[in-house]
Image 1 (spheres, rainbow, N blue to C red):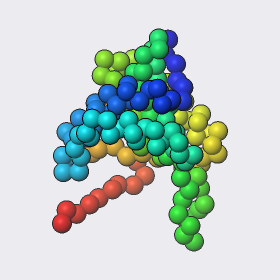
Image 2 (tube, rainbow, N blue to C red; image 1 turned 90 degrees about the vertical axis):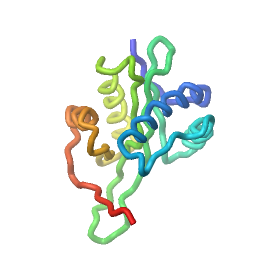
Image 3 (cartoon, rainbow, N blue to C red; image 1 turned 90 degrees about the horizontal axis):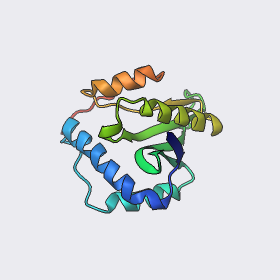
Image 4 (cartoon, helix red, strand yellow; image 1 turned 180 degrees about the vertical axis):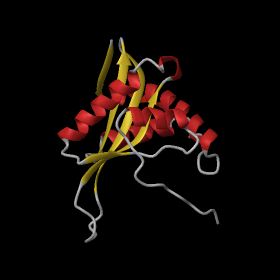
Length: 156
């Protein structure tokens, strides 16, 4: 049975492995922006995340084995007169390890994310998806997300 819980520092080694999978995708989709982290770098970052009141990390485990996670940022909209003051939970990273995909675990994680966001008083969830990641876009659409803006850039 899949269990979703808050991440603990003891999870760092498992999260390091999952981040490696996530980074492989990032390097695949946008090698101009991403590279693989040095071994151990993500474990230090996990500790920083867990000690930051404006961030959260949830893990999915199967019989005690960490098989996925989500990293969340709790943000306020910018204080600009034309923007409604809203609270957003930004989904920074989400992964389910390859051998556990297509079993509905991502949707179980997303349900926990939505519950977490409601508990924090968020008005909405936001994330980004690589343009070529059609599976990711399909997943987010199935979980209630819709495109509201496009990010564009100009290399210099």
